[in-house]
Length: 244
Ligand SMILES: [Zn+2]
Image 1 (cartoon, helix red, strand yellow):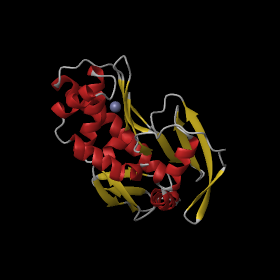
Image 2 (cartoon, protein in one colour):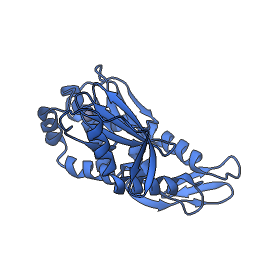
Image 3 (cartoon, helix red, strand yellow):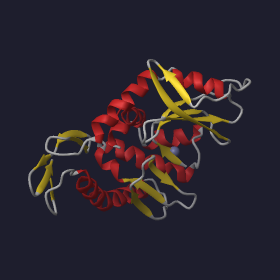
């Protein structure tokens, strides 16, 4: 079970109808996008993603119509525009003044010839860098590897849970995961979130040891250990994409 990034989804797939022939281009507002359609037997809902190349990818669950999925995609003009703007802002090289998330705050990077500084952090650069993003990410991953596993172990102990290995990863499509054997993987980007949101992600994964699903019982377990889980989910929905 995993906490998936907040892609745009529609919870209930409309009833199946005769599928329209799938177009390879989709007109949304005044723009035309290449769109790839994939049927997924295990998908529970329509999912619309933007690919790294800027095209659209629509996942259609079994029993749902491609037609319905395309109608859903066509209505997402506002989301598509936001997604494009976000990508343009992030695409440029990171340099002096680039604003980054760190422990729930948005901070400008202070960059000179040999260092990158933000909050109390100071990264020494190997040499002048046109883009300091790789140095920032490497530093964050090191910090996260030192901080997140002990935090996860503390929270597991608080709730009487026995867990397996805790690893910190550079996942592009999820905040964390919990294997059937209780091995927990956490995204280093948790360190960019407010601490209570990071704790929620960890508790969410820990509760999967009790409930390896997203049943009502699972959410009851989450609510019992994390009163602010709804606010945390809201934060992730509002800002999650800005961390990528
Ligand atoms: Zn989950």
